[in-house]
Length: 354
Image (cartoon, rainbow, N blue to C red):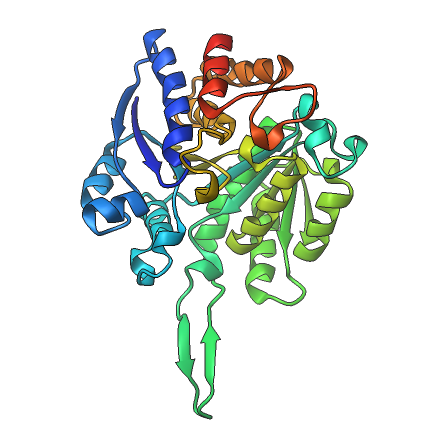
């Protein structure tokens, strides 16, 4: 069970350090984990002049699963686009063919007050967003900025999906729906975008292989509204790359803190890259105040999806539930009457609860 650890930039190294403590505890308790470390993003650019250098690529290809902190920072904004930290993240996803992104949005009862929505709207929320990660308008060609025949500058991108790309993400989503409440909502914009009309057709076709799953369809603008109006109507949502990017961020804020939400990006064989949903938060980096729980919960997802270690996954999730019940909070989820702790303090609490 080879795990490659990529601390990344900003708060990445601080939060990853706490997750590594959890992995080391499980290792000490007999789980055959092997940990290796490498840079990605800005840290890799600083060391190797590339956001996804060969050194990291070789280890990433050999690993069974990868744990990432976060990439990016303002000091890299002036670099040429191919050298920017975010390009390292796109490159590793593409290189390892990590096409399926799973983002759960779970509201822990203790944090209902942290949500900006009324507790009765979000209490007990538990949805999974499945986002296609390697196609769509983010990768489609042709793309660029050019001067047209009339002499005016224009920007252009291409929204593109092949049938095989849509089919494989459909199977991931239906498989997850089968393990949950057998409800799947596919989100598209089929009324104006042919690419997503095509997506919808294929979803309907794949659904024939999963007769137990109830498939519904929703336009993306309505889905964005329904997520804040009545989010508990959803169980599993499947959508393309750009819609998934927006909806998963929106869903994460239903829970009150993006610092609580893990994510997994998987290939065909469940090899995965696991990372918190939040970014590198350079404004709080190095202050020991960031919330490590999303990264620790990403470890639980890793144990579940890449290593099929359900007991260990639940052990980690239960430890997180326990520290929340005990009243420990980092600054982002702090409320009066709870105990504010640092990044390392939260790590201590989780280890004690394991």
